[in-house]
Every structure is written in C-alpha cells, then in structure tokens.
Amino acid sequence: MNEQMEEQNQKIQERLENVKHRIAVASGKGGVGKSLVSGLLASYLAKKGYSVGLLDADITGPSIPRMFGVAGIEGKSDKGILPPSSANGVKIMSLSLVLSDNSSAVIWRGPMISNAIRQFVSDIDWGDLDYLIVDLPPGTSDAPLTVMQILNLDGLVVVTSPQQLAFEIVRKAINMSKTMNVKVLGLVENMAYAMCPHCNERINLFGDTGGDILAKKAEVPYLGSIPIDPRISTLSDSGGIEQYENEDIDKIVDKIIENVD
Image (cartoon, rainbow, N blue to C red; front, side):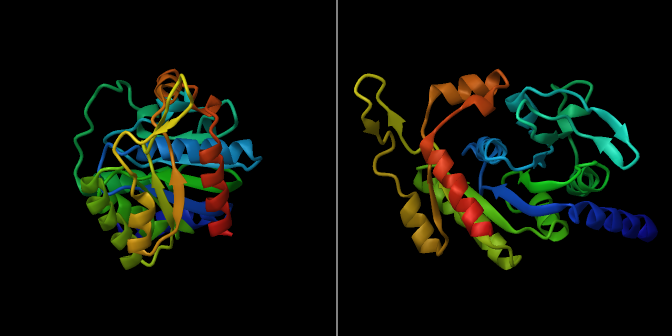
C-alpha cells in the first residue's frame, strides 16, 4: 500500500509540473454558488486566452459537466485518461463523467472520496495548463484537506451569499485555509443583487450586502459580487455557461489573476 501511495504521489507531482497555477474554490456551506463561481472562473480565464482545467472535486454532488455541456471521457493517451473539453477549450473532469447513471447516489466515506480526488489528479492527462481550477465540496472535512495537501495550491477563492448565516460559516473555510497555510486570494459574494429589467436599477434583494465587510473582518481581499440573474440558471441548465457575460465577473477574474501573480 505504501509503495502504491508513493507511486501515486510521484505521478501527482509529475502532473503538477505542467500546471502553472492551481486555484481551489471553497465555501463553508452548500447552496451559495461555489460550483457556479468555479465554472465562471474557468470560463472567463479561457476567454482571456489561458489554457484551463476544471476539476470537479465535489464527488457526491457533481454539477460541472452539466454546466458546460460535456459528457463522457475522450479516451486515453499514453499519459493517462483524456478529459473532455468544453466549447471554449476548458478541460473538465468529474465523477459524473464516468458514472453510468448520474442519478445514482455516491455513498462513499471520506477515504474513498479523498482517493478519488487523488486519482483525478494522478490519472488524468491534463496536458500543459496555465490554470487548474478545483471546485471543492462544501465544508472543512476530508476532501478539501486532501486538495490542499496534494496540490500545493497558489490560493483559495472563498464564496459566500448575502445572509448572515452564510457569512458566519464561510469564515470557517477562511480559517481552514489559513491553518493549512494556503493563501486566500479573496472573497466572492454570490447572489448579491439583481438588475431591474425595466429601469436597469440595481436591487439588493437581501438588503445591503456585506461581503466587503466580512472580507475586511477576515483580513482577506474582497473580489466583488455576482448577481441573481435568470440567464445564469438557463445557461447552466443547457450547458452554455460559457456564453454568460458580466462586467463584474470579468473584474473579479482580473483581480484573481493579479493576486495569484
């Protein structure tokens, strides 16, 4: 077992030599839009001309392939499994791509989930990447810890929504990152506002948003906010998330690039 682990660790390191930057996207709780932010980050990086991989490490709740409209794996090379690519060239790997039935529940304990994440890194032929984005499962348990331990991350993007409960829990993800000596690149506030379709006025549906205040208290950069937009849901459900355009998101991605470099 130790020899197998050492061999896998070596393969992981070999893969990572071809990846310039490794960024994980995390949240303290589910339902705040972490996977959406992961998908948008990967999409916008690709639009800016970077080569991008997107690893769906949310093993029990994978949603990335549906968002990008990809299904199944591409086959194998002499270096490993070839992940499918999106319309804009984002290489994607997720457990849902290898399951025969996506409606089946993945009832795995922590060690199995951690091993699956390790295999996604070691056995996938990612090729040369400028950025590998990792969509973490919510919380601070085995899976996020595995990613932080094996990937030598350049940083973590933390996602919250404009409710006090979400603010309180997301601080746990920030504290986990600091404990693991992983740089927090910044905080993104999802579902922060809506735009009136008639007058184009910005409406804060949950009152005055406080993502910038939380970021200041946690001593991490505030990257910006993402709106509630029906078009996001429509495009995600139809596999067209790469078609979504928003100036605020573009600015968020620019800040992340700046904070990594």
